[in-house]
Length: 117
Image 1 (cartoon, rainbow, N blue to C red):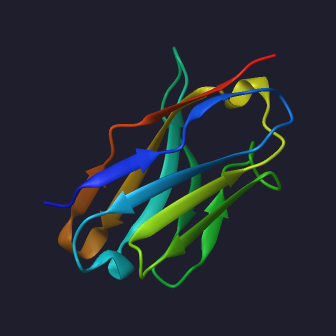
Image 2 (tube, one colour; image 1 turned 180 degrees about the vertical axis):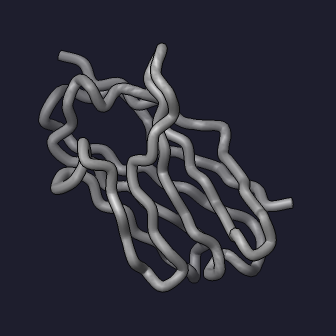
């Protein structure tokens, strides 16, 4: 069982920045597709950003140019740098570790990000 733990959420003002971190247990982190998702009240969970084992990235349309996902395979960590935050970025952010060949799919408990003036 892989453990996924997020941290770094908080309350920020519009236009400010915040960095989320996700640490994954085990010794095969480098083989996992990692993703950040978010869910706002009354809305479905949506993909924010993803990064492949090789480092290829993809982003949701609403965050392109503002958010950056990265990974550190030595620290088993995945990061989400969030710049120019908007009110609509308010949500619970979840980290996901996925390895399709094993049908492995693990989620963290989520971290709250609130953007408010």
